[in-house]
Image (tube, rainbow, N blue to C red; front, top):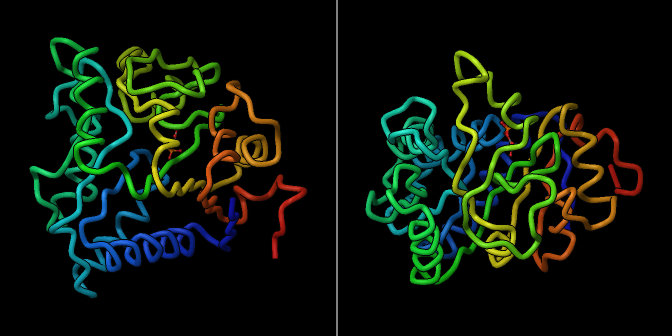
Length: 247
Ligand code: PGA
């Protein structure tokens, strides 16, 4: 596990984008796992800039998103499909047929989850998976208590996650209570994992994940078991680390 600490959110976003650009230049048909939320916004802005100004092409890249709310149509402004279109896909040259996001409106959710797993395999597996971390230590919608070996499935959001995500909806009641999420076992099969966190609100979760015991109560702690994991932090997110080199 390599912990990289950058001074500011912008530095963090630029650095993470640079690492992804490097992977795409080395392997133009990279299979890239993507995340939603506030944290990757700066990263996506930087990838768009690299596409526009530096000729970074996503034409052969395949993307797999981590999760999607159940019951929100793709056109809903808070669906993760919509988020990805607005914040990344419509600004780059990615092939629309190589974009995978779980379908939260699928009539058979279990079949959709199984299909999603099969597509990851069919595309050769995920090369690089970007992850955020919840204030409660979740990764994707794998809330505390999720099986560390889990596969793509339906999960109920933790109360804290509903509260955290209420900021995007008019009221907390409007936040969907269930989602399709890649499992922790699925995420761990990615060849590289980049866990990105910014801000003091994540400092306790980051400390628990990388300096605490591996436990299903802190799903992000599983990355201690990954062979090629990078933890990319800004100063504030790193502020509670005591054992990690912070030079
Ligand atoms: P955030 O979400 O980037 O909006 O903080 C991260 C997460 O909950 O996984």
